[in-house]
Length: 94
Image (cartoon, rainbow, N blue to C red; front, side):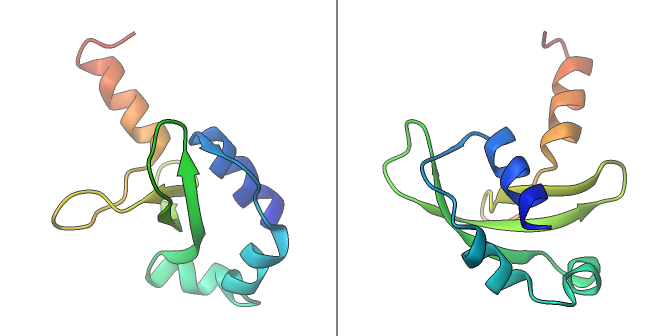
């Protein structure tokens, strides 16, 4: 599972070292059940151009499976990167 999380983090633009053992520590053995209830914290990471690291979460998207993102806005919501990309294409993106 940690390989999937690392792949999702890289796809979302995370830079720097990603510690596989740290991710496994946060996921635990029952991660498949936990992620259905609420997002799972998987560590703090940084994207290119950011000043600091932010907490990232693994969550379940009903359309695309698993996703990784950081909290957005006042309501602290998560975006599925694939859903966001599809939405941007429908409103006139590339």
